[in-house]
Length: 259
Image (cartoon, rainbow, N blue to C red; front, side):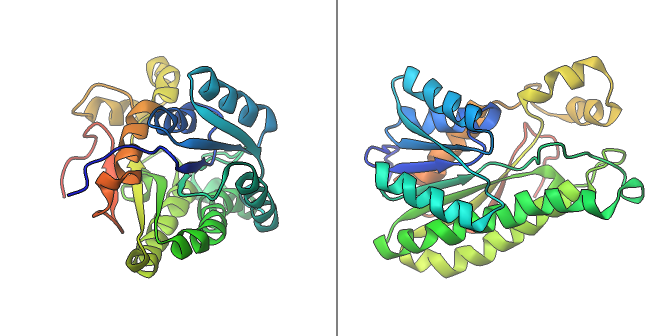
């Protein structure tokens, strides 16, 4: 039985990897030997994220590009692979559009819906469509889609209809894609996150009763960190995770325990 968490010799591409959860994921994968390609739509964040990983003693390069632009994805991934080698691991972490607003559906406008679908559905599909052929050809690969509990459970008053739609949509696609590439040694899974550390100020300020209520319902009184998510990604992306595919796993401190 495979139990190794060693990622030496692997190349991992993390979208939205310049800060917060994405950076925590990149740091963890680098700690276990992967060379990390740090993507961010903002070049300065991609550079600072890669620099942070290198400062920790890891190997990383910056790859600033827009995941919602297929041609940009194809060009940037090709350039990164020429620099560090083929992508073995993809973590689709980017999920919040710049300037996106969480609004009640009936108060929103159609032009405000698209950014959430573009980044969560089309952005992730673009990434998978570009990197999966190489993984399939080589007979090994790992894809982890970062999602949210909002894709499974609605929270009254959060204004998350479009965010939830994007997450639910990509979760469905991931399950089907997993059936296509699994026989060729490639696993594709989803981690649906709960409340994360970046929300601490909002929660503690009391400005969002909805988030406060979710937080109070957590079994573990602990906001998720990038390192928490990184540990789960490490398991799924290593040889130890080779028997898991097509799954959505909730990483949320027990905010809605059950099947």
